[in-house]
Image (cartoon, rainbow, N blue to C red; front, top):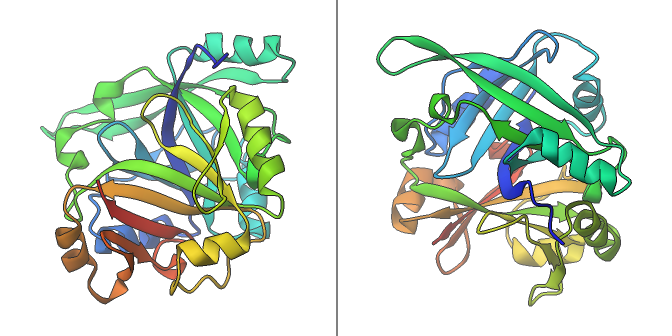
Length: 286
């Protein structure tokens, strides 16, 4: 039975060495990038968000070494930039950690934190969150997972931040590279109580919940076929490698991206990892 407190994929965390450079790169790809936010001191991180209709992308960087961000610093040291974590929306972080603990998983939390937000009218407020974590060593396909309860959704989703020149609207899927996609998919499925299904090319899919984005596990040969013509050098042997988004107007997206866009199929554009902080970015007509 699916976890009752989990709604589905909330956001994908992309780790960057330089937040300023990352924000500029994603703006150049046609995204509206929110102003920098500084997390509470215990986290030692800062971010820029790219807000979509119901989910979002988080560009994150370390600004001070803390115990909480030790795994993030280790990821950057070993892997470099790329997809480090994915978060689920939870209706209650307290209920969520209780659910997974009851199933024998050493979940931790809930943790409360926040970041200041400048409102469009010039006033200031705070975005506040409550999270819980699956065990650090449970990394399906090499990716950490956690869940986020939005305590102040109105301080995160502003209409003007959800409008993008490339017309991106939502996350379709995260692709994870694995030497054993079956084992990785089954690992994820067991952590969130969702079934494993097969895509036409043999990649294995695990839904995140509702209509939110899915996780797709595949080997390198399948990845290369899916993203033919995209330079894939520098990608890890294991981990999240692709962020696939839906767009409402692929023509507008192609115009915005210019010569950075690689057409891999009708209505599908890819951007090489060198343009997107180590991530294959896919934009497809919804």
